[in-house]
Every structure is written in structure tokens, then in C-alpha cells.
Length: 57
Image 1 (cartoon, helix red, strand yellow):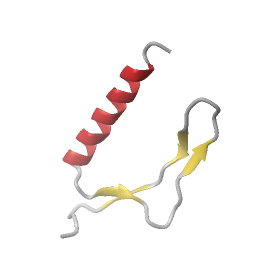
Image 2 (tube, rainbow, N blue to C red):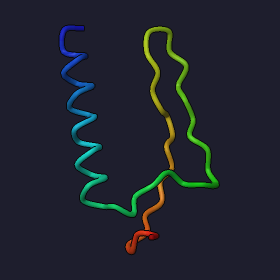
Image 3 (cartoon, rainbow, N blue to C red):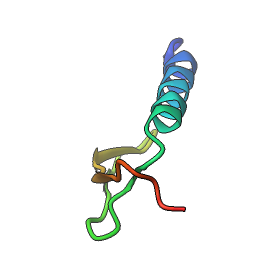
């Protein structure tokens, strides 16, 4: 797909901005992420997150 590289870049930029604006956002420590098995690329079907309003120091 011609736009796949752009889509990946947009996703990365959006995720970096989200992390910068919500510093307490993190992967949930007790719930596993679930991968969707696909031949060409990988994707999550489930990616649990947790958010601490006051980030740990």
C-alpha cells in the first residue's frame, strides 16, 4: 500500500504526542496485550492501558 508508510508515521507521531500530554499513561501491568496474527504485518487487537493522573517519580 502506498500510504502505509505515512500511516505508520502518523500513528507514531500521534502516540508520542499522547504520551507527552499524558505522562502517567502506561501499559497496564496486569493485563496482557493481544496480537492479531497477520501474514504481512502485526497489529494489536487488545492493548490495555492505565493512567496515573500524577506520574510516579
